[in-house]
Length: 232
Image (cartoon, rainbow, N blue to C red; front, side, top):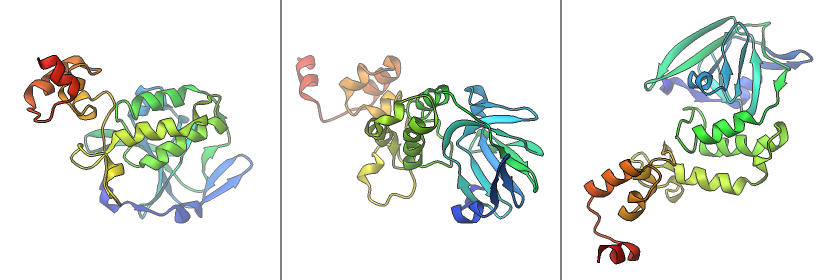
């Protein structure tokens, strides 16, 4: 799939969805995409009826798309399912045609998806390609309204985590320091070589072996005061 063809157009997709008593009906052919990894993480069950975390890309035949941002498991009944590759990662594409219901009204309430998202996204940097930093924060904070977890009560803590994870294309500078940045790279909080900014913190970082290797290989000219004490 050529991601360069995708065009964000929330209003266009909204007009192709019709909310009814039994679910949300599609008024034209639509496709719903999500990472195959969701299934491995317990965020999706793929069968005749698909249950998946409501953080999906929805697009039409012309590659106009929007993003569902619901931290709940939703039920879909697609007419076809296929997998495809996006930058070396497997994604699932579900197809819907009118008068299919793209989503059943049933929303499964559970706190589990929120905790899995936190562990898989900012910690391991396994973000779906179609969500932005601001949208991830919206999803997590919305969980206080739609799930049984209360994590979303304090969005500032998650904003801080995402600010550290979101970098420029090189992965070295946090994107919050770059005005009007267009393309970001996600860095996992467990990546000691990227998160910690001096040799000492790398050496004592979460993944000791990786941090030690980087600390030895990278020659830093600036030393912290604590490093100077330990080097005496």
